[in-house]
Length: 187
Image (tube, rainbow, N blue to C red):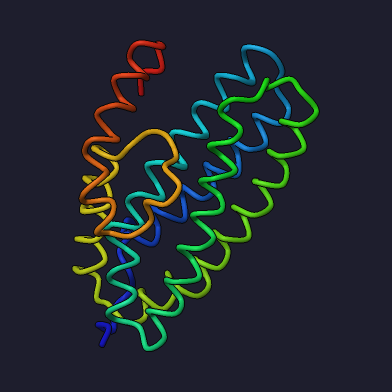
């Protein structure tokens, strides 16, 4: 059961919620931009979504599945949403960023991702904060940061579980980061 103290200023919930805000901002920036600026903004968005989701899948969702009463079902729903978002994001990688199709699909993706983030914040993160103590939440935040540091930088639909990420993730990350370096997409 959770300790009865105020949560720390920076724990896993605060960290991931702040990333959700950054994702929302990047969607807005990408939709407002055009040409090269839109392409660069989309790359930043794609990268943040990829590392963010990987870290949640490796660290946060498994913990929620174990700790929360309805955790396994809750996580199953989030993973299905993440797979759908990864597929849409992957599709957008090969579309002209200035096309109407790109804009329409990016708006749909934004709506889906923000709805997904809301579910995580209300259902998963709030329950984890209620269930875990400050120290555990801080340790989870450090684990998420480490997972993000080595996560793939592109979407990989079908790789949503911690186990799949453990097997595919390191190779995908190496390939993604090499490709990013060649294309000049440094972090």
